[in-house]
Image 1 (cartoon, one colour):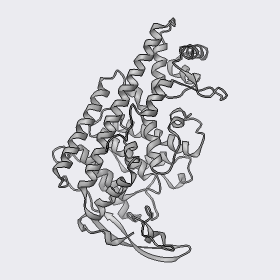
Image 2: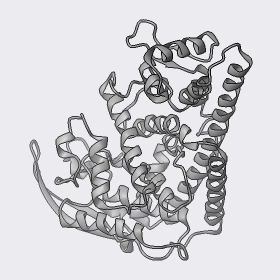
Image 3: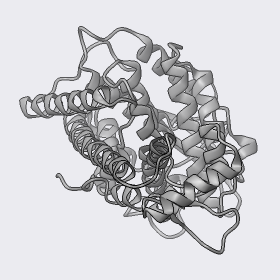
Image 4: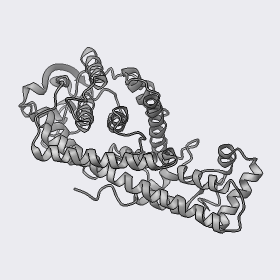
Length: 406
């Protein structure tokens, strides 16, 4: 880490750390400890305030759309799987979106798919916690990270704050043979009291009432910066940190239903994203970062709203196909709802969710296949899994793309 970059002492302090490299021997360096977040908004430019206002308006429009839906929860799982795929890709864990949307959560086909589906399970846990009115705690954050890492090589070291020093990235000007600590782009807080105190202070700050002093979009952005800079775990910090953006907006009442997909926009601009985060630490440049962050939320909210409306239209059109057909089953519309909320499913899933016998569920699925509402994903696979192709198409395109705006 280039220590000369840190020009704004009020943003935090550099502390001495030491260690040993198995090939290069003993080393000495410094780690960055961010200053605790304060009670006031950073000084921002007029242009940034206008960007934040647009983000607030887009989030409000998204939430208004969700509130108008008979059951916005139906759209949570498909949108969440899309977020899981994109946020994991940002950290180097990639699987094609189509495969993620149709994956069997009970039998992930690859280690990459396991991590992506872990994200979905983790997110559902956090959303339920906040919607039950429980406060954010350090224990919850540790639990969420542990769930994210289940079944991975780092599972045994997860579910608690890290106990070892980590580094982030590699400097463009790093010389061959440099110790990783010196060649790194950023060295976050050392483990121990500094880290525990930092994450505790962040949680305490998030639990304060900032309604009269800090815009909710700014609260979410400041908290995101602080979490990523603390980098409290061995792995999963990026995914968990971006998830906490949505959890923060949910806890602040900006969103009533967490159908917001933030990562595709950041994934398309990953270099700017990482640079903007680092510039807060090195130069105190809140303005650039919060402007970038607000642009991302505005684009994400607009894209998610478009996707939500597209899914709702498809849902209505598929029900109309059932209504105008010769099929006379009162449960056919319920199966359409299930196909919208669950991008892939088995006959057994239909039987359990709709309270039908296996035979009746199998017949109903077959009838919707005949109507070309459903199709078999892989005829050779057992058990057979089904999807609604028109629903899948909306999810694959996002009802438009999240990367459309600047």
